[in-house]
Image (cartoon, rainbow, N blue to C red; front, side):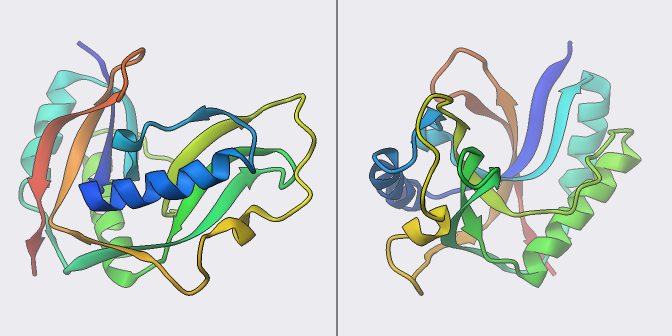
Length: 186
């Protein structure tokens, strides 16, 4: 059976709550069609799409042996993909750091070894907050990056695990844990 799956870093309940509060303030300022359910907030490491069970089993075995450097996510900004005046995606930015880059690279390499076709775009760590600008809404007259609540502050999220999530279309929350992998530190 095929599954729509991805590997991601989960957020703590506290971080999800803080991001949900930020999102509440954004809803009045950025007219988006679909706001992500707060329980679905995560940072995608690798999108796998529809995956065969055999390939997933091989991958799970490999991922259980992964080692990484200690890792903390620092969520520190708001940004968007698409046109600035009518963004396609609204996201919370995660500060780049060597441990995050290293983990994403290792996970991607293991996925390729198991036969998965991995996106070639450069890794852009972010947490999706909303999708699809409301077409008939007036274009934004300001930069969404100015909407981060307090400049110079961040939401700190220590990481101890990463997760294989499966998408359950039509459910809220729609991302469900299929397997959890502990981060074994070097």
